[in-house]
Length: 348
Image 1: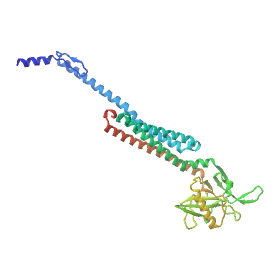
Image 2: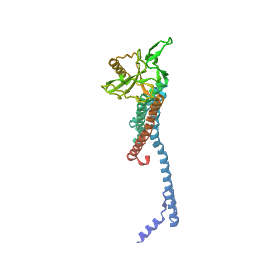
Image 3: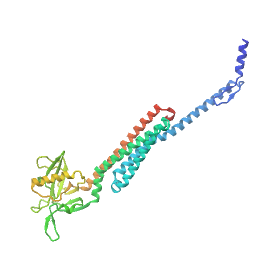
Image 4: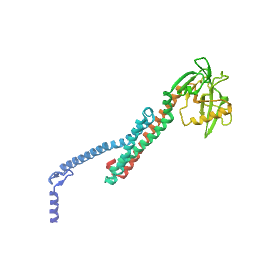
């Protein structure tokens, strides 16, 4: 018993070590000891809160970069490929998009090579994700921008740079000598918008179609008052808006009495099929078209051009919204994957 009492006395005399490294003499009262431990616990908790706040502030930056950098790259590449820059400075756009693509490829190469250079997997994950996101942004931005340009914007830009003719008689023209001759299309090869005279109509009775998968429909624009020596070089056109075996034409504003104007066809890939339809019309209706020009028959060509531009801008806005949510989901899934795979302290 005496030995146990001596051992207990020795334990009581040992100093107490606090978490911050300080010691409290064994003779201190329990109240003083309690206060010191409570202060040390509060200090440790405050230190943990500070570290957690600092960690969250630091990791917020790469999370935002993972969302916004690929999205902004997509919008820039799409805009350069889709709008006026592509039309006025195509070489500059090609060099710019090519340079961005090369940068993305180099960044992807360095990111994927990080594993072989001894970089930890948790450090290499973020650059690898960014490289994949950049490559997708420049690829889809360039591809979709080109599609939007060729189908919506480029035809409008071409028409704006072509000539506008007013009060055109589609059948006859009067020479300076007073002689009346058939109106020829070679005189109007630079026409973008043509406002015909008030007598002009679409002659549905001389319409024709050519089938190449789709139906390519044509009908001559004529002055019904012309009875002889008339020209047939102006043609209203449309796709899949006529019958295959009978005389029929329902393209554009064919049934609008106030429609007297034409907007030039600017899709070069369609022109050969319309030309074959004109050749068929020449053979069937016994007419001659020496220099055919193709138009969409409309009441207001300017309104139609604005509508085409609106479709191009609308496509940009839709893709801007969809791409934002797409990259937001991709960033969320990637960060969640990183949180589960790597150390929580790096991504919490």
